[in-house]
Image 1 (cartoon, one colour):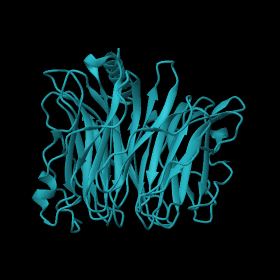
Image 2: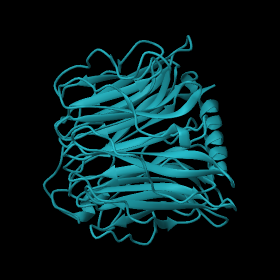
Image 3: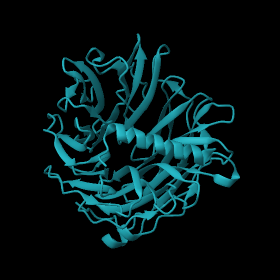
Length: 461
């Protein structure tokens, strides 16, 4: 079975249907085996189990181990509310806190190395709040214009707290605008500006931009575009770069015309080495995971195929352009999560299976990588024996040595979904997801588990 963009959407719909049914400190031993073999903690429930439906779980982890998880909760009266919980370096989770009034949703989060956090969400326009590392969440502030419709935000921050946010915007009868705003730490946000060229896209296209920022404040936004040409509708991946002075470049096209491309993902290191990945669908429906890279202030490389048939890629970048990418590979013989590693010289390894080829359904992999080369990956797995989704996780290093995967969510009849993961400088990994609460009533809760940083006290490049 070859699965492309349409197949991925059908599978995502099946996952959503399943979800709806479910709803009706580091040690001192620098040993690679210990880093990869240390156990994940038992799951912590972060939200209130009041029967609310819950999703859009995201996590960010600071260099010092501070973590923030955000999610969207659907209240009994039908309103979305963006909420958050914070884990301090002493491994204590806060009580959940609403970030805004009902009507807010789709939250995302970024955090700098010191633990200062920034959350951005939609629903009431694009809004944002800050949380200092030893403080409380600020009152929301507006980022988008008060008129029109804006949604699907993404945000990134650098070590100093400088930040960039991007989102989709519907304006003048068109829904294909990509807008961006930025700020230096402690300053006001800039006025939002359009960074794509909507004249070159279909009016109803959903760009769904992503953004990454270097330690020097250079940022890259990346998105997909659908265009009408003489030969029919085609899709492309485009990117724009923002210099530290706030100016955005014209968009660059990274791909030749394709039948369809999936939402691209991007990572960047401290000095500005960037790596992007996406799914490209061929006319016969075969999906291929592709990648391109960009040196600081340079041009994008030629694209490279990483795996086929494969889709749902994610990427994390460490130091000097070293990266780890993960994706789902599915064909007639296998459904597995795979990974590949990129060296500082730009060479990609051959794909390696992360999950077992045991007939389970696997999807939605995410990966995190720190500056020392320690990595963590999570994904959703539905075993053949139960058909109920769980979250599996594995840890490894940039030199390619990884643990066997284990279930890190509750293994029960109620299901877990939407995993995310982040990692600190000392290797502490935090994974978060949504979990059905089953017999206590319809709904779900946000949960998280932690993997200790033992063995990540040296560089694994």
